[in-house]
Amino acid sequence: MENVTAVFAGTAFALFGAALLVWTGARTLHRAPVAHGVSPVASTALATLFGATFLVVGVWCFTRV
Image (tube, rainbow, N blue to C red; front, side, top):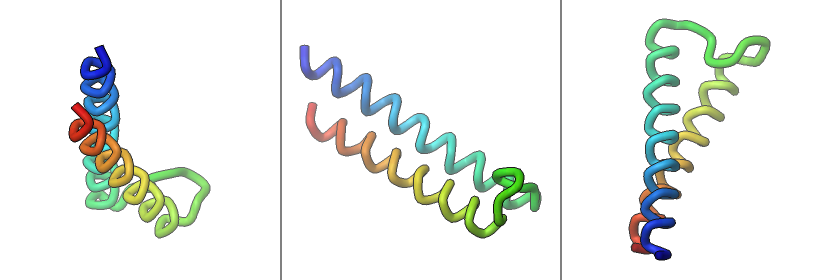
């Protein structure tokens, strides 16, 4: 039963992290703001950091299966 929870959590974290990284990359390539009203450098850096963090947490969850 714990394996199902780890797989679900890993999938959710990995999908969200990957989607956030893809979205941030697309916004950066089009020179569009990642977050409105925030420094472009800070918002890009934080979005990339959190996207990578969620992706790593998702992979970590998969190693617990």
